[in-house]
Length: 458
Ligand code: PFF
Image (cartoon, rainbow, N blue to C red; front, top):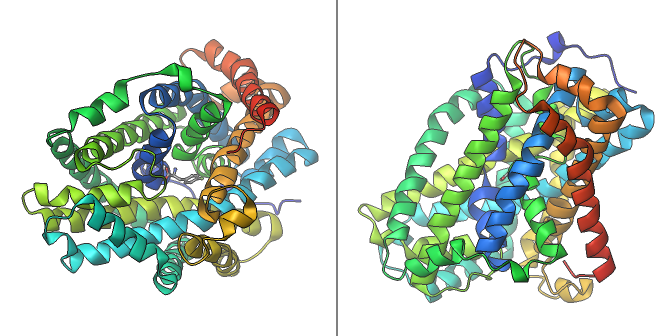
């Protein structure tokens, strides 16, 4: 069982702002700019986006508060938190979170590696001249199908993550996020404004707003739920871990809701950036994981100081990805440190090294191992497959387990008391309780049952 750790030897965030920055750093990442647009594109656009917003409000915010309360109440990693609140058998639910974090990190670092590759292109002047969709597509294929590049870039990104996590997530990353996240936001706003004013952009805006709900099937609902969980860093214990460092007297509701709000704002901005530019350049919305990487280079030359914009954009995207990979690795590392008594450096090297091994097939699957998708019979690459298994279904299952534990086993009233610690009232507490106890679990179970019954391929 857990080694005895107290809040004093685990450290913690100094302030609510410190927490919001770290948690927003975890939430805001490739999920907003890379995964959200292509998932929305694959699932029909407007209707998916409406469903996504509903999932953020109805599932994301309640689960966010539940996870934070679990962390605050126990001051432990996900496995320790589940075990303390639910009994020994519930530790497996935390274990699922740890495995999921590991699985997400393995494919996330591959995509984060691509951002480094694009940063390199931006610095070396590739985007100084106009680039059309075809050239951009060829550039992307060239980058991801070069086995050495793809593996080296993923490894480099994991190494960067390991350096930060080994040192502990201290003042450095908090201070850096404080400066960099607002800059990222302003840049994104600038790019999105340019994107929506491109000739032909109106089709992209229409695509985001036209809501044809007739195409919504169980796998699409699952994708929207999974994307909401993924983007908010929920369903695998990242917010349990961060909540365990949250100051006791601070307002948890304001912190949790702020994180959800900013994350959603940035995802929508990601949509306003990608879809208009995509239609302007004549690219298919259902292009899959390469979408944002192919779209972006087509708009830089429409901007004043386009090359500078490109450098800043990829640098900040890489940073946004790094603050997310840190939290992913931290969840797994905190498990080995808290529960297995490993020293932090050992946990970082072993987990990071193992993750690299799992990342290699993802890095290669886009070009060097195209046959793998045939072997798996999914029609998708290994990376897409990992993204769906760990980044959608495992997270939805995690959300379900969180709701059952908090709503039924631990009890919504007890959890509410922890949320309200420090004298901060939880508005609409009765609604929260109904969502956590009934609506969220039933919605998740219904979607999973439908997906299994229809045998839908993911
Ligand atoms: N929320 C991150 C993103 O949107 O890029 C990804 C992520 C980080 C998922 C941490 C889960 C997690 F625990």
